[in-house]
Image 1 (cartoon, rainbow, N blue to C red):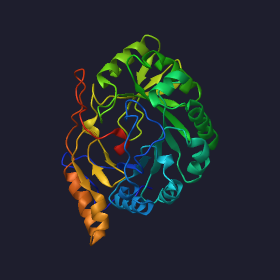
Image 2: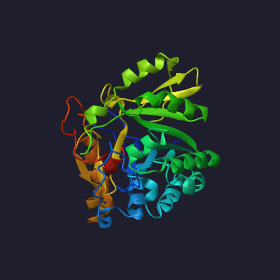
Image 3: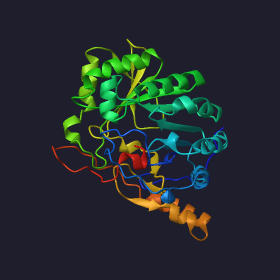
Image 4: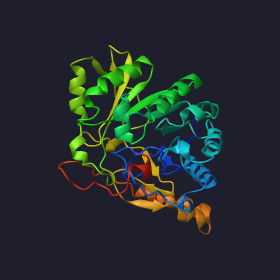
Length: 336
């Protein structure tokens, strides 16, 4: 039975915060072109929260009513000894925490899938935009498709429920999306398509590859029957059942149809900065609270202050060629 927090985190718009996306590192072993530049400058390790601090922070969130924690990056599985944190958080499932999950690019899954399942993880998201080797190498700047597919297979064998996340990109993978969906559904995996988000400077112009998902939906409905689904995962996707494939499709539309009204999430960077909204720059420094005097009370007060400052909605837009990103920080800071 889910415990009820004595002092839940409720923002100024009566939204209860029950879901934290916790970045354990900003580092990644891929360099996806829409996410970061090739020569990405990563944080000095001294600035990153220790695994002990990440655990302590997670417990503070659970105490205030958070029921779901998603570990993100960067790529979370490149963090040294990250499985120690996964195992410790897994012990909180059923003791305030309902679910522990993570988002991964899949390159390290073959090594860690069994341990993730043993720790209590039941579902994972794998970012995979294409099954074409050449396009994968172009998008990620690495030849690692085989490692990702092997990782997905390892997750299957370990009993993990896999959902494929794909960023829809005009002129790149848009014509492959039906095949990617059919492949995933054939293996028993749900798929979520995501509109490209204007976060951080990258070499290419995101406007050139911005593909509105209502347009993708119209294209898919010429091929398949999409029926709106009541399925919920706690995230922002709106789901559809596809009769012909027998699978489920999610659409995350931060630009064409924002999901702010029901937002139950906050994001914490690997340096302990809590961003109350992915599409805003306002943040509160939880690391300073944890490392300062009277740290338990300071951390609790910082969480309260952060949630009270959560905005009603984000400010994402991609409306002109060559426009600056909506925010300077890269996706690898907050994990999407």
